[in-house]
Amino acid sequence: MNIQIQSIICTTDFSDASNYAVPFAVALAREMGARLYVSHVIDLSAATMYGEAVVDLTELQNRIKKFAQEETARIVGAEPVDWEPLISVGHVADELGRLAQEQGADLVVAATHGRSGLKRLILGSVTERLIRTLPCPLLVVQSPEAGLAQPGSREVRFKRLLVGCDFSPDSELAVEFGFHLARRFQAELHLVHVIVPSVLEELIKPAGPQKEARPDVRAELKTRLAALAAGEGRSGTSTMTALLAGDPPEELVKYAALHETDLMILGVRGRTLAEKLFVGSTTDRVVRRAPCPVLAVRPRTKKI
Image: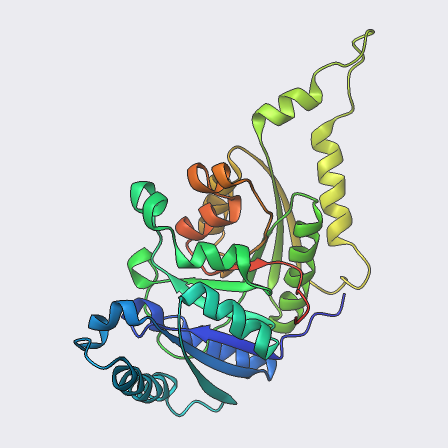
């Protein structure tokens, strides 16, 4: 699979947490030779965040756009990267989806504060909506409040990458991204599969009227992980595989912390509305708790 990252959109609302994602986007654009778009979506329903009282909407919108352009330029600074601002008005998730389609973005970068419990059920999370609706992969950078230290420079290096593998088509795409980035950054790649104990118990239970023992599921999964690591065109990458057991989001987060992972890569899989509201997808749950940035990948949809 030929993976190219030539166009990157980074979104910011000018908060400290949101601006924390900009260095990652700048560094990636510079490393990939990609064009960077720094996006700010103006939500006029929250005009007070700009220190404005709502009077004439047209005048207010023009004033906020000017402020957003100046603030965007300040955030990016004099970085040697090909970039331009994208200032628009509307709902953040909807606008970013539209802009990603319009610009043919290969990647969107955003920051998240993380939410759980009642606030998440009632208010939702822009980041989580983006994970499910963007037409391209999303790189989620946790804010310093989530436990990350402020970067000392605008240089981001991925030395150790983790890919969550469940052998689905979504996970296969994540693996492809993992190898692409590992080669680009000369990073160590960890392919990790998490067995859910209840599922494993069902798989190893004797089947059929003769109660014949089923094959060793763990051995089979280890073989499949090894096959992923040894796939065509994957030689030369330092690759490790791990088979874990437990709750997938919890185990992936613990593994990332233990091995000091710089980036986690996960495939995005659709779920029912009830699961999204009350359980959340593996990707959503990992994003809220991960000790490092998370790249949520999905097939690139064609421009309409």
